[in-house]
Length: 94
Length: 227
Length: 94
Image 1 (spheres, rainbow over the protein chains, first blue to last red):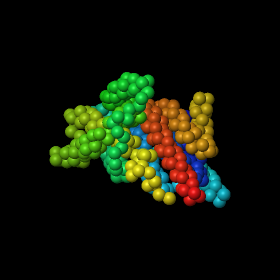
Image 2 (cartoon, one colour; image 1 turned 180 degrees about the horizontal axis):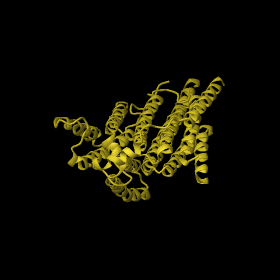
Image 3 (spheres, rainbow over the protein chains, first blue to last red; image 1 turned 90 degrees about the horizontal axis):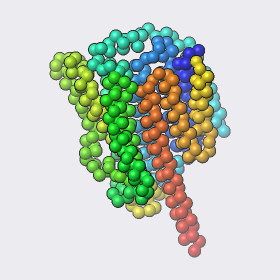
């Protein structure tokens, strides 16, 4: 088994763990962390699987690079909404 | 309890499905690294990832910049009115002050280097933008309030990257070429120009999502967070 | 595949699991930052230095700052609410 396929499998395990954490966690912040890690698992598969077949591949790497930037801005937006929600009386751990 | 069991079931199904999909993944028909190798000379950029980002798949990048812009617009819409931090609220810690004053120029310089290196080595607009944003966050944490003082300029800066990218993309159509197609002799310079402005915009975007997040001080004076 | 890859992969999975398992939110966020740094190492193992650079700057740096800042805000609001509650309680009993 090559390095690339190994990390793709690690990505699959991370996605499964994050799915579990995302559903069963109570605190919204923890849900957000789980969601972020799910994204990281997807990125690992997205880079690992093509590189397993064709060697170092710039196309999925570039796509994942845009994905990382989108993920951080989505996280920041989620945090803004979370802060607004808690400030207007919401409970972060329903 | 039911929730945990359901979550465990969902996780196991996900894991099984993904592992099977990875193990029996069909061989792809197109050899992408070879395609990139063949076309890299025509792209005007020597580094393959930057070439993919801003030439071969520039449509994705354009849409990504649009998504980030939408995120920051939504974030700014949710910010709170009223005076934020007074400019005098500098940290009293002399160590932090001195360190910030020395680190800030270095961070910005590293950002510019990473941007410049992006055309022939690992680096590029997104990493440089992240460094610029990190510099801004550091300044903000040390008490220098940059972003909320120049409010109108900030809003222009947020959209500048997208506007320039779109202008370049559309202007190709006036010359009879397809959308997002660079003229051959200008490709390298145009890509660098777009990257430079994108760095500025992405840095500013990430910074203002941090700076304008709703704070803990209640502007209307206590007790407005409801029951 | 080196022994390093095995350790790194297991470390990623462990970091992901412990983000969920820790019952202290602050510890979760710190473990999430650790996860981001391990992921940056993983990208270098997958020969994607661009992604490693972006992950270290964005995934570990910026996201960490955002999460910790939000955590501080949530804590302050909780303290403020607790203080208000005791105040109201005293007013009601007097």
